[in-house]
Amino acid sequence: MSAAVREAGRAPSVTGVFVRLKLAVIRNGLRQSRGRTVGWVAGVAFSMLYALGLGAGLIALRGNQYAPAAAVTITVVLVIGWAVMPLFYFGGDDTLDPTRLAMLPLRPRPLTTALLTSSLVGPGSLFTILVSTGAVVAVAHGGAAIAMAVPAVALTLLTCVAMSRAVAAANTRLLTSRRGRDLALLSGLFVAVGAQLVNLGLSALSSNGGLHRVTSVTSVLRWIPPASAIDAVRSTGRGAYALAAVQLVYAVAALALILRWWYRSLFRLMVSPDASTLQAPETAQGEGHSGGTGRAGRAGRPGHAGRTGLTRRTGFAGRPGSASRRLAAGLLPGRLVAGRTGTVMERQFRYLWRDPRVRSGLATGLAIGLLLPLVAVVQHGTVYQSLWAAGLLGMQMYNQFGMDGSAFWTVAATIATRRDAELELRGRALSLAAIAVPYSTVVTVGAALLLGKASALPETLGLSFAFLGALIATGAYASVRFPYAMPQNNAFGSAAPGQGSLVALNVFGGTLSGAALCLPVLVLSLSLHLTDHHELLWTVFPVGVVYGLAVGTVALRLIAPRFLDRLPEILAVVGRV
Image (cartoon, rainbow, N blue to C red; front, side, top):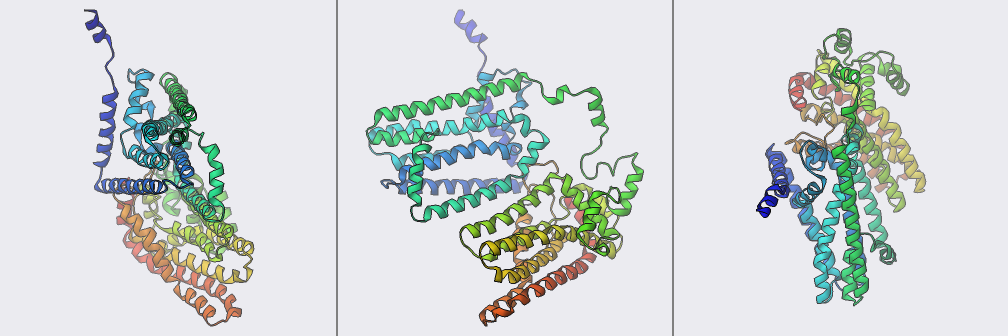
C-alpha cells in the first residue's frame, strides 16, 4: 500500500518527453522547405566527414611524440567551440532558450537532467564522439588505457554539452534581446577572423620548432577540462595511475561545477521576472503605438500622411538636410548628390546606421578586407592580397533590395521613369563607393608600405578600383535579375529558406564575372610585367580608375530599363519574409 502511494506521488520522468520534443523540433524544422532539408543534410554530411577525417588524422599520429599534444589541443578547441556556439547560434536553435519552459510546472533539477539528455541528441554529439574517440585512440597504449578511454570520451561529451547549455542559460537575457540578436549577426565576422587565426597558427606550426612550442604549451592545456580526462588515458598507458586518477577526478569535479552553474542559472530564469513583465503600463502603451520597427513601419501607418508623402516623393521617410545628407555631401561633389541621388544616399547611410544586418555585412567586409592583407604582411606575402578589400566591399552591391524587404514598395512607388531607376541605382552605388574607395586606398597603401613594395602601389590601386567598378556593375545586374529575400527579424542566416542557390550564384558567379570584367586592366598590368616595361606600371592606376568608373556608369545606364520593368517581380521576391 505504501509503495503504491509512493509510486503514485512520484513525479513522472520528463526526460523521455524532452527527447521526443527535440526530435520533433528537428523533424518539423526540416519540413519547412526542401531547401532547408537539403542544406541541413549537406551540412551534417560535411561535418561528419570532417570529424571522421580529424579522428583518422589523430589515430594516424598514434605512437608519434606529438600525438598527446595534438589530442589535448583539439579537445580544448572542441570544448571552446561548444562554449561559444550559443553566443552566435542562439536564435537558430529554439531548444537553447529555457525561458520557453518557464510557465510549465517543472523543477530545475529534473529539468536539468531532461535538457542534458535531450542535448545529446543531434549531430553535434556525434561529431564530438568521433573526434574524442580519435584523440583517446592516439594516446591509449595498453589494456588499462583502453579501459580508461571509455569514461574519458563520456566525460568529454558531457562536459561539452553541459558547457554549451550553461553558457546559454547564463546569457539567455542577453541573447534574447536586440543586442544579442545583433551579436549573432556578427557570427560570420568571428568565423572569418577565427579562420585566419587558424591559418596563422598552422603557418607557425609548419615553421621550424612550431610543434615543439605546442608541446610546451600542452603542459598547461592538459589541465583544462575535459582535456585532463583525455590526458588521463595517456597517463594510464605510462603506468602513472595516481596521476591518471587525479586527472579523471579533476575532470569529474569540473563537470559537477558546470552542472551546478547551469542549475543555478536555470533556477534564476524560472523564478525571476524579466524586463517584459516589469515595464510600466504607459511604456507598454507607448510601445503599442510605436508602429512597425522595420523600414516600412512608419511610412505605411495611418496618421503620418506628411511623412508618407515625403516617402513617395523622395524614396525615404527622412528629413532633408540631416546629418547623413551632410555626410554624403561631404564625401562626394555636390553635383553627384543633388536631387534623387543624394536622397537615396541619405537613405542608404541611415540604413547603415540603424539596421544591424546592414552594419554586420559591412563590418564583415571591412574587417576581413583588412585582415587578409595583414596576414600577407605577417607571412611576407604579396601586396596583391590587398585586392580583397575592394572585392569584399564591392560584394556589398549584390542583393541591394533584399535588405529592404517588404518596405521596397516605398522605393518602387517613386520610380516611374528610366531616369528614376538609374538615379536609384546610382545613389546606392555611390553610397557604397564613398566607403569602399577610401578604405581600399588606405588598406592598399598600408600593405604596400609594410611589405616594402611602394613601387607596386600605383598598379595595385589601379587594379583595386577597376575590380571595385566591375563588382558594382555586376552587383547591380545581379540585384535586379537575381534578388532574394532575407530574414527580417535578425535571424541567423543570410537568406530565406530555399534560396541558398541564389546566394551561391551571387557570391561565386558575381566574383568570377567581376574578375572577368576587369580583364583589360589586368591584361595591361601583365603585359607590362612580361615585356619588362616596369617603368610604365604607373599607367595602370589612371587606366584602372577611368575603367572602373566607366564600367560602373555604363552598367547602371544599361540596367536601369530592366530595373524599371522588374519592379513588381523584385517586390514579390524580397517581400516574402
